[in-house]
Length: 94
Image 1 (cartoon, rainbow, N blue to C red):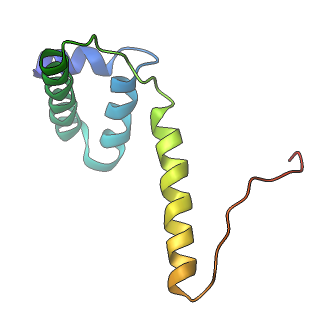
Image 2 (image 1 turned 120 degrees about the vertical axis):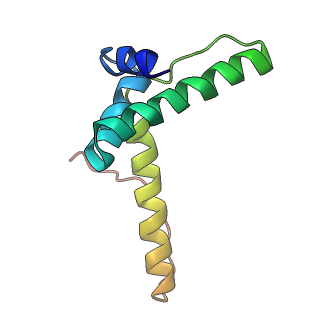
């Protein structure tokens, strides 16, 4: 699994390579490789359990999740402070 994770971490423009970079920034190389091996095992299990082919979510999957998570956290924090929050997209071009 470590060899597979090392190879996946060096690939360009994939979900796994971006996952490696994300964990590596926080935890270091060794833990990031183990986490990537775990992701590969989970993906293999899902492929075998569902008989569906693996589809790579792409390297932008984390930025989408980060935006959603930050929005959710900000709304919860404002609500905890007693504000009523309504989310609407910006209409002006910034």
